[in-house]
Length: 164
Image 1 (cartoon, helix red, strand yellow):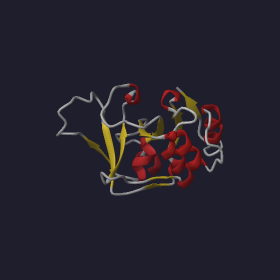
Image 2: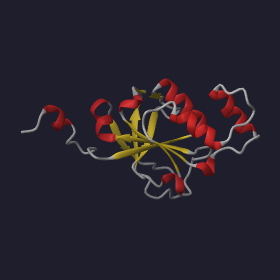
Image 3: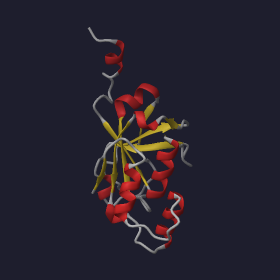
């Protein structure tokens, strides 16, 4: 016989990983606050497609980070609903979008499995975006290398930080 906790984890999201794509700058804010905040769409978007960042996809400008979350644990506290864009003229492939609507996700570390950083998207040293990233980090330098950023992020989270 299943315990209540085991019963809860038997749902449709048990064993599923959800991916949240974000920017380097937002990653720092997310880890500092330990939460994901509802965006301008009124929701927090996720995908089941682990390769989304590698594909040419609509709306992914200024990204470079993928947060991997345990969907089973997340759905024990938050209502996660499938979502499909009906008004796009272009095909975005199998994005498999899921959303948490109208609610911030607090205590993110309970659901977080891994932080994946894509070096290709890291802002070049001595550029405006790199300087902005330094300011968000509280770094007095005007430029930061990717390797230093990795160590900075590793110090902010207990979950594995990987580089792609």
